[in-house]
Image 1 (spheres, rainbow, N blue to C red):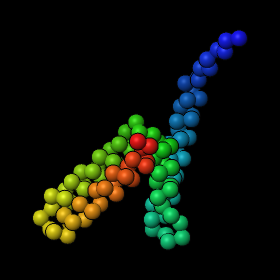
Image 2: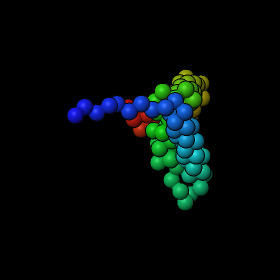
Image 3: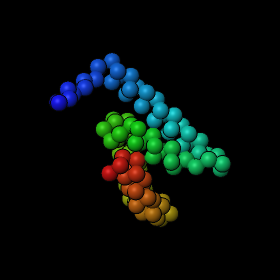
Length: 103
C-alpha cells in the first residue's frame, strides 16, 4: 500500500510560520529579561528563539552579522582594553551563534 504525500495548504503554513516567529520573539524577550534579572537565565531562551527562527531568517542573520562586525571593530580598536575585549569575546560569539543556528 503506497501512502500519498500530505500537502500543506499555504494558509496553514503561513499560520505556522507566524506562530513560530511570535514564539521566537517571545523567547528573545525572555532572554533579554533573563540577562537583566538575576533569577532567570537568559541563554536558553536565546538559543530556543534562534532555533525557532531557523538559520534562513533574514533578521536573525542580520543580527549575527552585526555582532560579527562589532567584534571586528573592537579587535581593530586603538584602545587596548577594547581590543582585548574583542579578542576575548570572539570565540564566545562564534560558539553562541552555532548554538542558536544549530550548525
